[in-house]
Image (cartoon, rainbow, N blue to C red):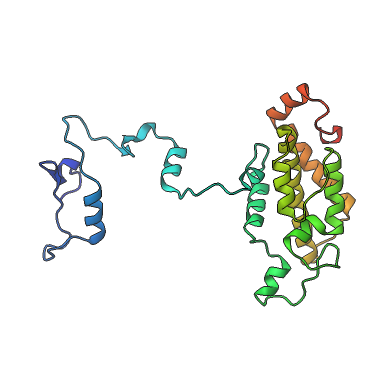
Length: 244
């Protein structure tokens, strides 16, 4: 074959006709053989060659279509809507996604690998540092979470952080559910950042100051959402005044 040859140069009588890379070889590569047995050449047409993707004109193919055709797509996990809701911020959502997979550098996890000796929580310095403790049971973070959720009229329930988030996702009031999940996602990120700051001796914020920072980020996210703007007109009491 030569540079500039067309597709018709390797198709004869409706079958593949490929030159061998090594003239002394009598066999094609097994991967190529499998591909040839799976994909039949398209019937020859007098028109110009077209670039196709999944049998469709590639010039009309969207990026999301290509991504969905090459990625592995499994069953939806129960916490899907907890992370990927309409008010998510990608930076916070990625952090929460990592936490759901148990990949945060929690001291209990690092201790299991023999990387640290102490498992004492950096935030309350009393209990063992595990996921549910940091975000749900720790006296430091629970005070912040209580103030955030009480402003929405929501009680802290469940025996773990994940069960509480799923409870928020299953609230009968779906509008309040999405807003509450936004609060929880930003809370999760800020608490973990403060935990890391203490781990590396780069400063300590009190719970009131951290709550103020969380409310600032919540305010910015809600203000940037056209969905929230429309919602406020129809349900002015849904979102606390200090968040708008």
